[in-house]
Length: 79
Image (cartoon, rainbow, N blue to C red; front, side, top):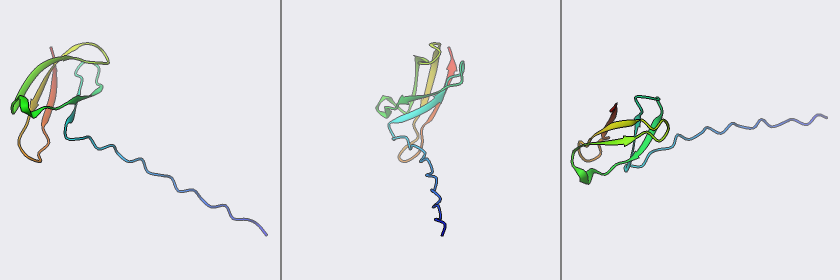
C-alpha cells in the first residue's frame, strides 16, 4: 500500500497596504520607490526638497491632498 503525499498549498503573499500617513514616489534619478511620511496639516499643496536615501541626489517632492478618503498625488522632480 502506497502512502499519498499531500500537496502543500502555496501561500499567496499579501500585498502590504500602506497606511494613510505614508506615500510613495519614484526617484527620477535612480528609479527606486521611496516611502515618505504624509502630513496634510502642512496644506493641501506642498513642495519641498529631500535627498533620495538610495542615490543621495536631491529631489523636489510635490504633494497634493484632495480631501477625505482620496489618495494624495505624490511626484518628484530632480532638482
